[in-house]
Length: 469
Image: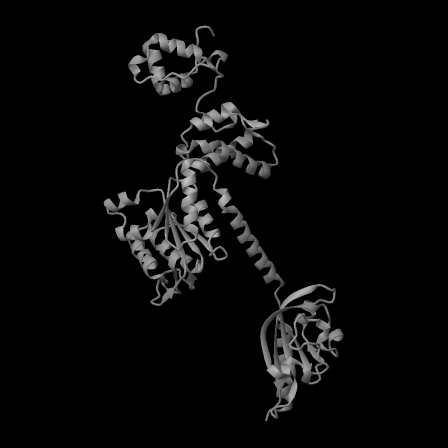
C-alpha cells in the first residue's frame, strides 16, 4: 500500500497539474457543492476560489444544463444519470455580467463501492475561437460580395452571351474551361460561378499553375507526407483537399507539365488524390474550373497538351471576350472603377471628359479590363478636377501630345481612303489644316498610321508644324 509520503507527493503533483492547465477545472462534492477551483476558472469566470468554493455550480449560470432546472443536489443533476457529457458549447455568466463562450465537459466520479463522490468539470474559453469564426465568416461574406454576379460589368452583345453561359453553369456540376486573354476577368467569372452555386458556403480555392515549378505545383495541389522529399518535415494538405466540398480554380492550366497533366486527369476521372510520398488514395468532392489564355487545341497539335485532358476540362467551355471586342462597355467600366476609386481615395470625380473618353475608346487595350482599371487608378493620382482629362491618363494610352481640334472640323464627316494612292499632297495639307496639324487625327481619318503620315509629309516636303505658327 502507498505510504503517507507518497500520498502527499501525489496530492502535490495533482495540485500543480490543475494550476498549470489553461482550461478551467472545478469539482463538485456529492452534494453538488464546489469543492475546488483552479486558477484558470478564476480567469474565465471572474470569481476567485474563495468566492466559488462552497457554492453550487449555479454560480456560473450556464445557459445550458443537463437538468431542466438547477438541481438542489448532485443526485438530481443530469450528470448522475448520464455519468458524463462531452464538449457542449454554451455560455457562462462572467462575474461582470458578460456572457463567455465556452466548451463544457463533465465526469461523474464514483468510489470502489460505486458510490458517487462528486463531479469533475472542465471549461474551455472559446472567445478567441468565436472571434476567428466571425472573421472567417466575414471574409467569406466579403469574398461573396467581390465575386457577386453583378460585378461582371457589361451590356454588349458579347457580354450578354457570357452572362447566359455563366447562369447556365451555376446550376450544373460540370467542369468548366474559361478561355480568354489575360486581364479579361477569368477569376471574377470563376468566383461568380462558385458563390452563386450550391457550394457557396464551402471553400473557393485559387491556384496559379504558371507560378510554380513542376515539383512545387505537385506538392501545392496534392499535398505531401512527412519525409516525401528533402524539406518535407511535416504532413501538408494540398489545395485539392482544402477545396473539398467547394470549388478549385486552376488558372493558366495551359502551363502545366505532362506529368501534372496525367495526375490532373486522374483527379478528373476518379475524384481522388494521392499526397506526394503516400500510397493511400483520398476521395474528394470538388468542382473544377480551369482557365487559360492560350489556345489549348494548338498546344495539343504541338504535342504540349494531352487531348484526353483537354476534353475532360472543356465539358462546358466559356469564352470571355477581350475589351477591344466590346468597346461599348468601356464607359460603363470606367464609371464603375471611378466609383471604386472615389470610395477608396475620398475624391469626388464625376467621370471622364469627352476628349479623354475618345482616347479610351480608340485604344486597343492589350491588357483588357485590368489595364483599364489600372489606367483609372493612375488618373486618380493626377486628377484634381471634377473629371478625368487626357493628361491624367497613362502616357502609353494617350501616346502623343493632344492638340484640340479646330471648331470647323467638329461637324466635318470623317474621310475614308480605300488606298494610299487616293491621298495627294493637296488633300493631306487640307486635312492637316482641318485637324489643327494633329498627325494622329489625320491618320485616324484616312485609315493610316501616324508614321505613314509623317513619311508622306517628308516625301512631299510638308513641314511638321503649321507654317502659320
